[in-house]
Amino acid sequence: MIHPDLIKKQRLLLIGLLILIAATIFISIGLGYSSVSYDRLVPTIIGEGSFKEEFILFSIRLPRIIITILAGMALALSGSILQSITRNDLADPGIIGINSGAGVSIAIFFLFFPIDAGSFAYLLPVVAFAGALLTACLIYMFSYSKRNGIQPVRLVLVGVGFSMALSGLMIILISSAERAKVDFIAMWLAGNIWGSDWPFIWALLPWLLILIPFALYKSQMLNLLGLSEPVSVGVGVSINRERFIMLMVAVALAASAVSVTGGIAFIGLMAPHIAKALVGPRNQMFIPIAILLGGWLLLLADTVGRNILEPNGIPAGIMIALIGAPYFMYLLLKK
Image (tube, rainbow, N blue to C red):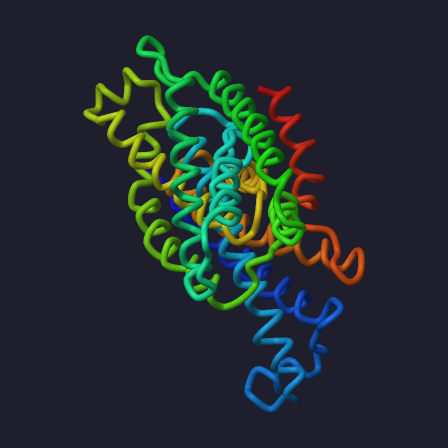
């Protein structure tokens, strides 16, 4: 039984985060090299703007903002699920190597396979999912023992090891590639929001429309998976089956996000922790807040980053890392 005051607090936080996201969107549209002045925003939205204003808003600004929010939501939910199924507060798809696995598969696809421009955006999440899934299975296998199940510290260490190994493989892959393709992969590695066009939104959106409701439906199961294995078995949970299903959901969310935003880490670490600090550790309470927090954090990082240095700015992945790396060290020392 969840206390009514806690439910009320969650609803107020959700409303506050929606207002915060809307305010950040409004500010983001009016900043940068190509922007729409705030007094012209409403006329442009209702179709009374100039061709230039409509082009900037609907072809440049809005697609980038929407893809950034969706990717941040996916990464935050992926991190929330990983932390629950592994009982490890340091789990994050970027830290434990899942993003790197997706990146290597994207690099191989981009460098060595003929690419049809029309289907490129829609194939990327599938290719990223295949690489992330293989990496996640290997990390899971090396971290699991029949006697103790998933060992949290070992999971992080194995994941970091895989991440470093895959980063080395990425360097080998691009060492003899064409300059244009190397530039693209380097941009991906830095966490630059590169897939900022409407086809990439349509490619990413179905994954979230299916997986976010499914994860919320499974939130009570995630609570049980977060308990010790004897307790979970005692209440009738099929641990291995449920954990594998939720691992697939986390991998799919992370892979679909990084396929269009690049190698962004720490969103899946910070958003769940902040949400838990606000409303407690129950998944059905903190996951909706973590989802909105993830979207807002990545949008804020991208908005700040692209306006620090003109015209290209600093990639959102680097901005998040500047905040997330010290936060990760703090959690590591605390735990």
